[in-house]
Length: 423
Image (tube, rainbow, N blue to C red; front, top):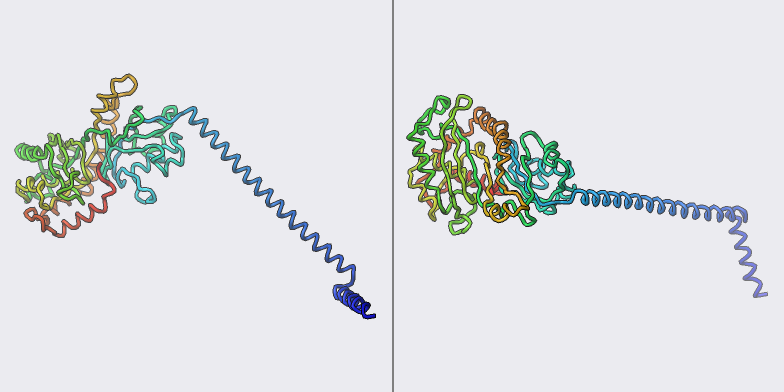
């Protein structure tokens, strides 16, 4: 009897449970519904997993297809080491060198890399990692500075009509004028022996300091003044310590010593009723703003703001306040590869890097895009005349302790432009 009670109690409890759930049928139905829900969830899960697998397979197939097409392109158009001769008007650009992540500061290299991608000369991922194409420019021209003979070295696909295809995607003020094959180890900057720059300016820059600059069109440069200007420019020839002609260089820094082989001002000419002249300077390499400061100091001496001995003092250990001429008229004319030409130019495999055949195209580009921009901007904005009005602020007699307001402003501007070092 004692053993039967627990069994009866269990039956009673089961009955009550069945009644609460609506009887045995309802409980069985609920159990079936739960089972169906579980099966449905399992099927949905499997379907989702199959869809994900399918999407991954599609992506993988696309990737394989793209890689196959890229491999086919590389097989058809293998990448070769070349140099491009590039010409551009620098107005509106923040120099030559690309600054990744700062799209609001458009540079010449931004235009060039975009065009290389669009023309299929380089893969798209090379645009963000330029080292993948071994890209190197010869000179990092400053903001607003132009070039008629910039050279860049890189590896690209030699597609049909390469130069024409690249130019299709470039604005008119940026052009590739030539292409040549070079050795695998060639570097546009490191293999360069010298660089030639030109600086176009209105001759009123050399007028006496009391001349009425409102009469810029009436000014004509006297022959004796031109002789004095060229005598001063000749002082720059040779090796000097140019630490005062750039920023963030100590007098003891060996890199401040630079070698200049040529500097002179050509005969004046008339353009848009204003007399202009072109200064030519050739050297091994130039530092940030060096050429503009070399010209600025000669202008200050010629106009009578500074004595001639300031030039000798500027190469010494003391700090000298050297004014910086506007960047508008500066043009990278040509880069020279004499040693490379001597070693490889006659080996029968590589071309000489002298661009004689492109001379007409270079001249046409300068006459169409560079010179008109300089003249028009100078006439409209008067950058040289405005800059001349700041010369009285400079203290050319001060030395190591010179910290005048204008000098500090120039230093701040120099520091801001360090990324666009001339070369």
